[in-house]
Image (tube, rainbow, N blue to C red):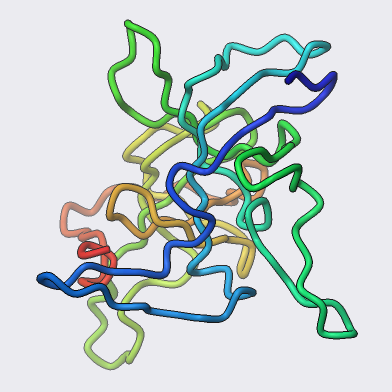
Length: 201
């Protein structure tokens, strides 16, 4: 199956990441279908669009928008699938719904790469002893970059424009590259903040 302008993907695992193994038991963390924090965002490309040139190939692993695999209820309480849904194993996504890529070819280094337009930021630990916030607001270290800034740069971005993603046990913020507003100099005492619940997921 091929689409003219869209990518065809399938979820890696289930549609939701709402279960955790503890010993020989399985704990269900959440039962709400609409909660974006527990929706799986990792997919495998099944086919690429016919009419668009891309370096992505079938088999590549991608991080997609949280609404791709999401279910929701309409005003009558009826459960519905997202507009990306084709069947349980097949979803249709636009190019701008793909936020990170891990290439599967023989030259792959097993790292994530950000397509043009997006960067992923690690938040910084807030060391202000008078603040109740665990992390600094709207500032972080670039983890994955589209080339607009360098990996490792400390940057600031426009308030409340970030989206939270879990990537390989790290809680990261996806930020549009054109919303990065400032680059800071390293002070040498910066420390990234990744909560313990993220590392154990």
